[in-house]
Length: 220
Ligand SMILES: [Zn+2]
Image (cartoon, rainbow, N blue to C red; front, top):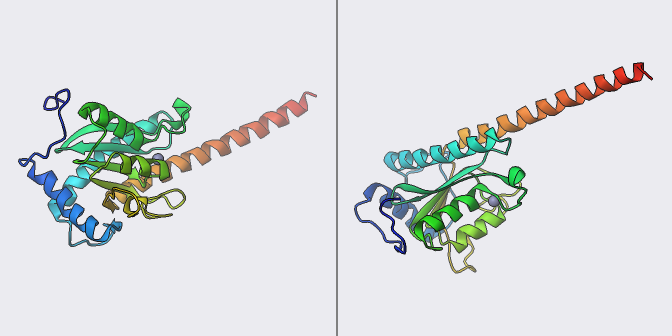
């Protein structure tokens, strides 16, 4: 974090064209409609270049998700980006930390706050592999993030379009435009593979337990 010195406030850098443009383009759309924009189909408002940028940052969030998988956690990862640079990373650590709040988004937001010495992330964007839950959606609103990009939907707990869209609720003092479907297949696949392996492991364990039980029965 060379450019960001202690006490430095968030400021837009006019030289960061690529990324700023990306935020503006979707920010404007968000203010008008404030609805989730699906990129699973063709979206005329997102240029190929901007989509490429979004996919690049999502690939970094996917790297984070893989770190979670390596330690046996549900693979969810997030990054916070400011002026084209990652200033916060996080991956799900709920099981290993024994903390219900150790979600990827919260950890990434916390790190971004520390790096910027600011609780406001007004000019920052969040990339997360899975649709944020109610807690993380709350943190996104409170930290005044500029834009949220997520990969796969969470039909059971997602609050950025699935169950509701908290980021678009006009009763809050801040609304956050969002874009869904960035690298959706990859994000979804990570989760599907994880749960498939988990189920297979549980079945193997069950079988092993049954065999052990039979053997123990022989020695009664
Ligand atoms: Zn969450």
